[in-house]
Amino acid sequence: MKSITKYTIFSLLALLTVSCVTPKVADLKQAKPLPEINLGTKENKAEFQKLQLRTYFTDPHLLALFDQAVVANPDYLIAQQRIEMANSILKRTKRNRLPSLELGAIASGTRYGDFTMEGVGNYDTNLSANITEEQKINRSFTPNYWVGARSSWEADVWGRLKNQSLAAQKRFLASQEGLKLLKMELFTNIALLYYELVKLDNNLIIYQENYRLQLRAYEIIAAQRVVGKATELAVQQLKAQNKNIEAEVEHLKVDIIEVEKALRTLIGSYEGEIIRGKELLNSNFDILNANIPAAEIINSRPDVMAYYYELEASRADAKAAKAAFYPRLQIEGFMGYNAFSSETLFKPGSLASQLLGGLMIPVFNKGQLKQEFAIANGEQEIAFLNYQKTITTAFNEIQAVLKEIEIYERVMKLKLEEVNHLNKAVEVSNDLYATGYANYLELINARKNKIQADLDFLRFKEENTRNNIMLFKALGGNIE
Image (tube, rainbow, N blue to C red; front, top):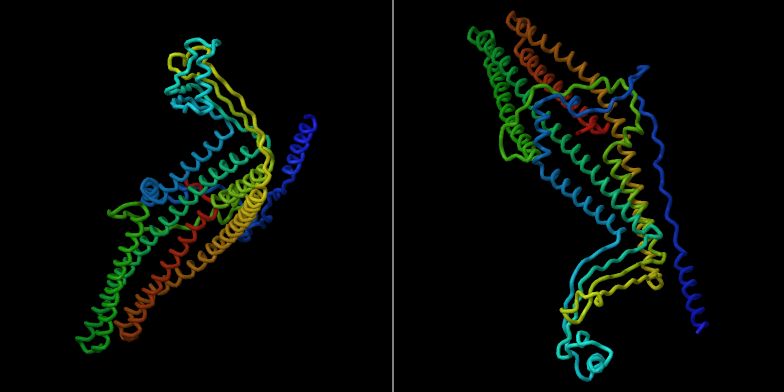
């Protein structure tokens, strides 16, 4: 007997030793250090201030669209539901570490055959002189009643449940950052469409103003044609240009309808007028003249934070997979009233209880555990690569958009000077043509060059507006 006991103990110790030989969890990798963002040549730059939504975007009509989108955009509402689901998963994993407790009642009935162990036993028991009348068993139909509580608890010795809970917590945080990222993307797209509408409105104004100038030129040439100082060719050329402007105006109206439709979709609206201002977004020179703390900004961006939380979650998954190799200690028990008659169920003699402890050691499923651990370790490596990729993308995005804003500011100054020169050229061409020092082609070209310069200047202003919108997103502006 002693040899059997020793053999059993040695076998358990051997199995325990084998189960404790586990693979190593990969260390949490660090992203490559970020270089400084150098912009401009000014010394003693101001400290960078976190961008705030309602001070960066000051157009009240645009802010109203932001507010409307967060209560009606389906994608945003879906993301909010996903956060609630992630929160429920987090709460569930936390409760896994606590003992379970169930209250209940069980009732059953069995008719035992006369030639079964239970049937013979019950018959023999009823004939015993050691039992009372209450203890006699109904042999024709034997009931069984149980009322009480039962509980089970896994002792988290190796941290498996703890790491599962940690992984769920990190994924919940990642889902919160994901909601911020979706909100940022939503606001960015709304702002881009909104200012595209503003640009189209300004395009209409440019065409309408130039159309009036064309009419004036047409009146001059028509008057010259009456007195024989201009040809019919000049008149027809002016008429053709006027029709071209009218066609462009109609085409712009189609573009406006398309952009309004896209914007209404984002804010979750079927119809209604998109009220908007007239000015495009100007550059924020305070940002351009500030020290940009690249690491601080990038590490606070929602996309980077989401991937970092996912990296931490994947490492917790790997730790939980490692802990699965170790023995599991589980304790179970119940307490309640158990009797074979309803009359005696709640008597003190019917009180029953049990306590059971178990130690389970994985043996034949170690191959499966190894593969699950390998998968978890691979997920951790993928999460790190995504994290590093997001940081690299964010840095290059900030660097590029800052430089583009600088360049566009210089381009717009040059284009504004061009517009001013061409405005003066139109006035001069009118006077020269009236006095006979310029022909109708010079008159027409002056107006054509002016309208093209006006449109180019507006296009560059809109591109600069787009860059400033993307700058808010790149610098992780506060969207609350």
